[in-house]
Each structure stands twice: as C-alpha cells, then as structure tokens.
Image 1: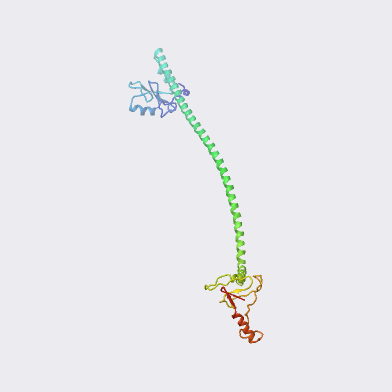
Image 2: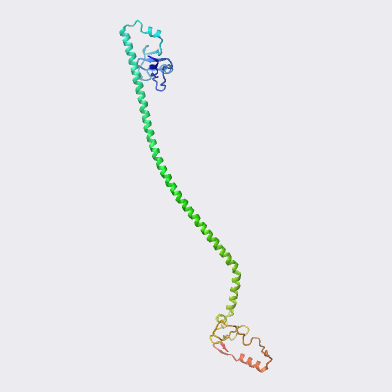
Length: 288
C-alpha cells in the first residue's frame, strides 16, 4: 500500500476513528477489521472478540500486528519462497480486506452524511420556525408600535386637556379672588339694602311681632298701627301710593306734649293729646 492509500484507513473503533497512517502500525483481524495499537491493547485485553462485529478470535493468527509502511527489504522477503497460488491467495485476501475497509468507510461516511442531512433538515425546520416566529414577532412589534403611538397621542390629548383645565381653573381662581376683593363693598351695599328694607313700612307692618301681641297690619290708603304701638316705634311714611317714597316724620315726632315747638298755647297741645287719645279702634286697628 502506498502512503496515500494508508491515509484512508481509520481505526474501526467508533469511539476512536483516528487515522492509522500517523502511527505506522496497526492490529488486523481475520474478520477484515483494523484497530490502532492503543485501542487494540485495551479492547483485546478483556475479550478475544472483535469489537466491530463481535466475531470470536481465538486462534493465534486471528489477531496480528502489521506494518503499514513496510521497507523495501520487508517487501522483498515477506512473500519470498511462497508458491504463486499462495501469493495470489494472500493478494486476494489483502485486496478483499482493502475493499471491505473502503466499503465500510463509505458506509460510515454515508451514515455520517445522513446524520448530517437529518441534522440539517432539523436545523432548517427550526430555522423556518424561528423565521416564522420572527415574522410574528415583527408583526407584533409593528402592532405594539402602532398601539404605542395611539397611546402617546391619547396621553398628549389628555395632557393638553389637563393644561386647558388648569388654565380654566386658574382663570376661575382669579375671578374668585376678584369677587373676594369686592365682597366687603358688596357687604356694605347689602347692609344698606337691609336698612332700607327694614325702613319699608309695607315690609315691617306685614310681619308679626316677636312677643305674640297684635300684629302690625298694612293699609293701602292710610297708615295703620296696632293700639299698643307708639309714635317712637313706627317709622311713618306719606300716604301716597308709592311704598318707597320719602319717609315723613311721625305726627308727634319732635313735639313736646306739654308745649309746642313754636311756643303755642296749652290749648293746641291739649287738642293734639285729645286727638291721640281719641283714636278709634276697629278690629284691633287704630285709624288716623
């Protein structure tokens, strides 16, 4: 065998599969298997059976060590003295061994190729699945990006609405502060209105008294008062039709019962007292 041919031979131990040409020697069996020195020492030490085909190798020549790179002297003497038939038989067996090793190597390479193709198919299937998953993930990413943009626009709209409401709230607070600053003047105006309302005879005379006595009644033509009222408690008005006309001082306001303002006679004072005492009461009301 040439050196190039020896490069094809490998150790038939599937766990080893090392090139035998690197070692120069190998162990050959009669079942046409070949092993490296280290594997043969380990495998045949425990059992005399071929590790590749489990054939029994009990005969002394079933396991032999051979030189893979023989010298010229070895080549010249190894078959010397043998008859041609023996040389042809040895040659035929050697060629059969070589053919078997090539077929086994081809089968092993085919098995390796098949396993590689199966792994490739599985890898391509996984790649296709990964590609489909990637496409689904890309579609989901696009959908999520669209949803994110929609949410961003929604949030921006909410922010703008919040800013608008903040401005409206600030404006309302400003208006409230203005109203609060104007409130004291409004209080004075309301107090004045209350005073005017309290001085209105139509409002006063229509309300019942606090002590449950005869109430003060209103009259459209002339002023009416209860018999128990005094001239100092009743704010008189004129007998005009305007209920909000100018207030007219009462009949006895500023007059002394004993003497008149202009120093009149006692007769005039007595007449006035007589007029006051002569008030006619009709249904609990005094008429002037």
